[in-house]
Image 1 (cartoon, helix red, strand yellow):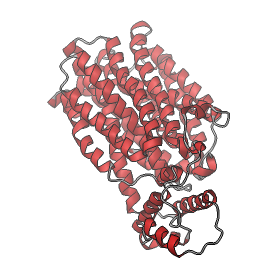
Image 2: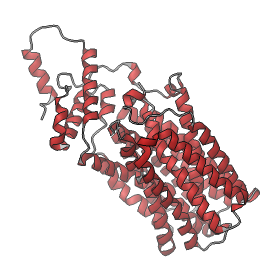
Image 3: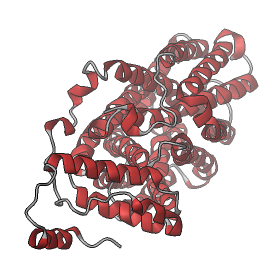
Image 4: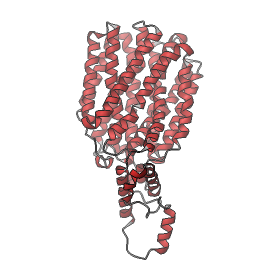
Length: 481
């Protein structure tokens, strides 16, 4: 085990002869590079599984809370006499809050660290889920969903950034997507729980399940160590070295080989950080990053406008347009998330071979084709609607997982959380606009017009994906500096 830095440095100051030494900036750069090399060489261990499970649990209930409203509305619509435009507003209110949360918490994560921000966002969405369960009117529920959205929107980009920064270059796609699968699993469980428990126990049960475990998870998040890459970027090399050493120790004998790399133990706890190491929102559209930023924003907006509009509206469409009984409608709608889990698992197995770009091109293209079939005659038969909408959602939903992998990869550490957070705000914009448009279009143009709009949006996503940069098996520091 390495001696504490303060002890090592004190001994060196008292015993070291007065000889020339490298400049502090050069020494700190060398030490930072050594720490990053140790992280890349580190074998997977049980600790990485624990980190993914804890952070993934926060993401699981993030997904649960995001989708729970879809299985509540079929009961509240007749109970509170909610109109179709109000349904769209209720769904959209959470996404407006998520925009605020994504921007605020990603900014905070660059300054205060990934862990405290993920824990705070989780606590907010958990508390507000309990508040939703106590809502007694449409207006109160709308307000609670907006505030809850702030926590939901803040947790995901920070969590994705944290997991990405723990990953090695080789196999990062599989490592990350196996974590990211927890989100569609959360959606899938939400569907199954909603289909079974809401008819039996009432709509409040969804919000109680979404809230109570989240408070425990927020506490567990605070017990995870901070991202070493973030600590290095802030010049806190002593803390970064302590975390890396802890992870090496958790790797057991297999991790011993990484300890031959130079350590940061001869440096002070804090080294000067140049201004360029402090990420800014404006840098996203600087010449160096403008192209990749605009492409990422388009991918996020297109994927989630389609996916979240389908996810939130299908139960209501099945009951109001196709007149399915509530249990049948909820069961049919829940199958979309089963399809997403299957396709995300397949994606995780092949993403480091196909690359990010070609998977997104294929998924957008396949989704557009299936949605086009619905738009041109496929809506007459309810069985066709269920099958084609389920498959198209599975494809588009796999894109939603891959963009969470891709976006943190294309930015340097100093702006990784900001870049991911702003990109996810386009998720929220698309998710807020989409359901509201569906509510309007169902009444004016029929169900066919809705699926035609979804097909057109998927085609825009296909065009954007052809301009992506490929990031598979590259170190984060190689992709962006």
